[in-house]
Image 1 (cartoon, rainbow, N blue to C red):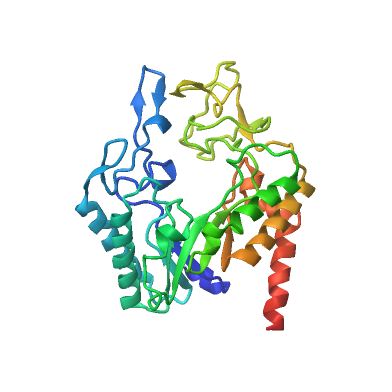
Image 2: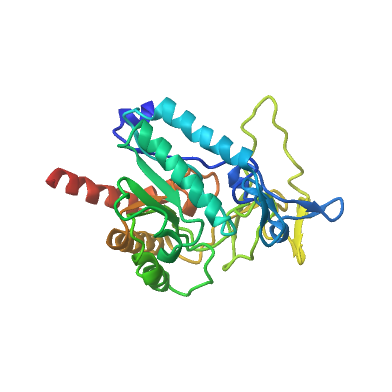
Length: 335
């Protein structure tokens, strides 16, 4: 937070993990559930679970875990008490990507409670709530009254990486445009932020769906690169890089899944189907579409070892990010 303040950056503090997982993804801190079918094979995506809210029976929540919900509420209190008046803090999001099967009355109650916490501690901080992958006005316009929307923003995450393969970057731009201009989104009454989007057009990224657990085949041929060596000089160990067999254990959901495994020391990375110039075009058109349709956007900007199109380094190297930043700097100077 201090570093952000030093460089005049605003921070959206987004809680990515809550107790017992809000979505069952590994990016929530815990991948739920997992069933071992034998010593080297497991299931995850076909038995996906998210226990934060309570007991999920595969179709609905049969009970609500009030203790877990209260723990998450206390977390928001703690964050606001510690950082609520820090000069870098701009917004707070109480839970990242609650899954599409969330019990909506419980989730909406949680949002209302945490919004009150943020407002009571520092009403200048923007309260951001994720759409639970349900990007439509019908689901969310009743969350807060029309006269009670100050400093409230809806967050939606829009990636192209899981879309069906398209032959041209222009087609991807058209797809993104039709998504963002759709009435379901445009009729949402709150300001909207696209809290995550990236330059990826495939799911080649190593372990994108979880450890050895890709949940779908890649749309294009994936490139292979030398897997990184350990950076833990005194403690790290390496694996047999000459082994011709994929390194397990393996996910198996319906059929054997080796989409995202290591073979002979080689790891998968982004497809080379589209050139850097194509990727720059994708960045230009996506940011332009978002400028027209929403109030804020966040390029997924983690620095990756292997996957440049999920990394801010790619955006910087191909010139798109520089042009984007210069555009907004000029606007700022003009204002």
